[in-house]
Amino acid sequence: MSATSTALYGQADHDLAPSAPDAVQLSPFIVGSTDLAAVPDESLTAVTVRAPAGAVERRFVLAQALRILAPGGRLTAFAPKDRGGLRLKKELQALGCEVGESARRHNRICLVVRPAEMTGLKEALASGAPRRISDDGLWTQPGVFSWDRLDAGTGALLQVLPPFAGVGADFGSGIGILALNVLASPKVTKLTLVELDRRAVEVSKRNVTDPRAEFVWGDVRHDLSALKDLDFIVSNPPFHEGGGEDKTLGQAFITSAAASLRKGGVLWIVANRHLPYEAILGESFAKVRLVGEGGGYKVFEARK
Image (cartoon, rainbow, N blue to C red; front, side):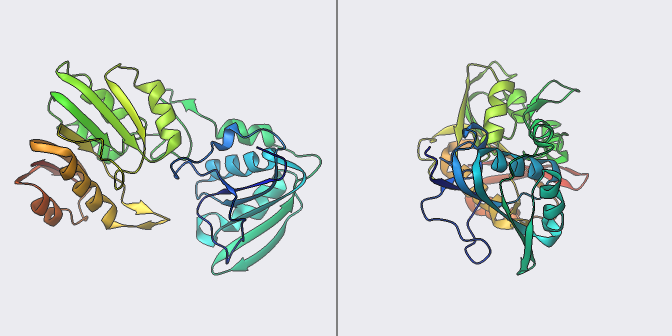
């Protein structure tokens, strides 16, 4: 990566922060992007960051962006006011930056030139790096879904999952908690973990060391033609994207699962009680059974 390169973290918004069309993409949610943490020090002239909402993750990304800027390089960071934007200026100042700030479309936009001396950089990098959860020893990273606790939906699914057999997949596999449960069955011959967040893929490789596991950094809504005739799929699908609720995400997971299963194959899926998945399950599968409901969640078994 040359010293004349520019980079973008997250989806571009040229109205808020113009970025070069050939900017190197650094977001872990865009398949094929470059790992931000692997970019060499002082190698870029400009970085644009759509700042994450989570405080620890956001400070980590800002610190990484400053680390990879060459002396005199420019950082542009922006975020909605209610999703970290109001804290951007102070967080950049805490890293030693002089900050120019503006507002547009309910976003705060901060411009900085990489300072000659930075403060708190090592601490911000360390706090957002991959780590082990002390309770169970699993690897995780701030910013990954439910990174510091067991998600209640995953917990609800774990309570009722049966032993599986044959070839299967975990759609939206996170750090690998469901996969570990599925692979406890000796009759499972192969399990493909599919996850959009590259960070989750990397830590799940540390957590799930069973040779029957295969890892795919990908979007289950697209390009899963290699996954066909599966015996089973487990899933705790997301229902937020871009900061807002999106019911179509889980519905797309269901459609993709139906396309990947063999006739007679089964999907086990958990959802928040208010999400309208019953209709799409009924359209996509021959038999649908509500297995359990409680704590704000519902678990379905759907057989193709």
